[in-house]
Image (cartoon, rainbow, N blue to C red; front, side, top):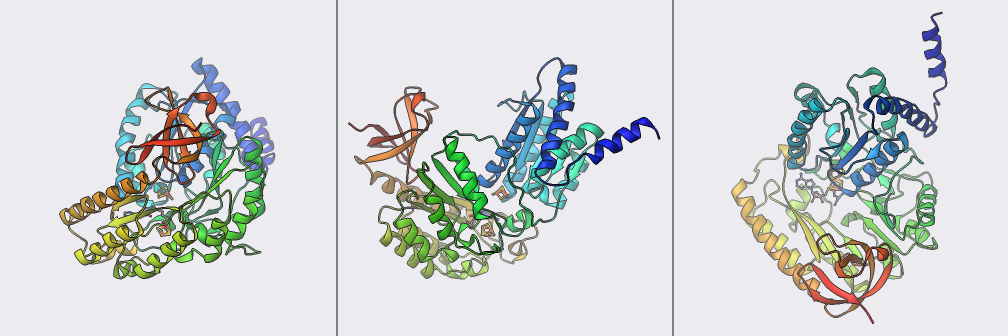
Length: 482
Ligand code: SAH
Ligand code: SF4
Ligand code: F3S
């Protein structure tokens, strides 16, 4: 037999079948290739991961960075200078896609100038077949394309590209697999996102997420606890539990458990100071959860509770499975149990068929709940979702006018809500030195408000009692309490 062929066969036979061992094997193999590439280039090669979209994507990007660092790449924050650029994409609204196409053009030009350059695209946008077709046709310089379900296989795909020098495309339609224990590089030493579930089963009629993130899967509670314990041992004091609908956590586990029960277990972890979570779907928010939050010393007094619309008629068309009255009653129950809770939300304006009367219902909910802050979105038609085929798409000028009126209402109320804390002393976790004034640090209250106050880098990751001196609309200027 030809020596090369038998070498190759021997090498292939060594590849572990089990995960995550298989990926650690490919990280080593990628490392050997990279070392050769660096020798040829006469310098260390760099990478830059750019993240679009939600916290779920941000967490996935930390996993990509963890893998790249283990392979031996060096992080380069400036995308323009990096040898390996990875875009972790979002497709929740059309403008998210446009941004990626716009920036890809520039990357293509950079690649012509840098012979070492590689480009990888992954994330939600790649789960759409028409996107991949367009990339193949118009952006052939992209080296690796993969989706949301096989992000754990990044090292293997990288090796496949390094060894073939061909474009590697690997997209899975769905998965029931959760691969634990891959490396990840946290952006902050003191706080971290922790996935508790993946995917979504709700199929809100406007939303693409269930199609690109697949069916809902909960992580085993023991894996979650183990991960948080490890994070705490590394200095993390705050975790953000992540899922598209955390309130339905645990339903699909072999031994089902509720989200509230999971929170009780996480609360017991010594050294963990703050627990946050995102996102809560109103239809699944239980009284058990309200009780657990109200009696907890660690769960932050902040609830992101997307309402999407205040009109029962539109909510039904959105397939949200609650009514205006049901939502308002829920908000009341939450506020009664925790008068100091901060409530935030997401609102879509211009869903197909939305009338002025429906929009007035949305304004009414905003005025009644009095959100601490709200993300407002113009409805974006996503091909393949039921809403895209609905009649009565609302004209752009009408939507814009409603959007502006909603934004003003939301901002006026959040300014008033922010001002309520004037003069109080609060516990603040310092996150960074202020970007504009190095004499200040920036920290976050339990309710998610930001405060800037005199300090230095040594305070990052520490808790301080801070007096909120001056409200600036949606943040505070403060000073350490005496
Ligand atoms: N799972 C979360 C939301 C994830 S997407 C939840 O159910 O609340 C984040 C936000 O994007 C949504 O809350 C919604 O307000 C907005 N969004 C989703 N699809 C949209 C679309 N087609 N057009 C405009 N906004 C959209
Ligand atoms: Fe989209 Fe609805 Fe799932 Fe949220 S709950 S991700 S809005 S389908
Ligand atoms: Fe976007 Fe995917 Fe998150 S579509 S909002 S990045 S789940």
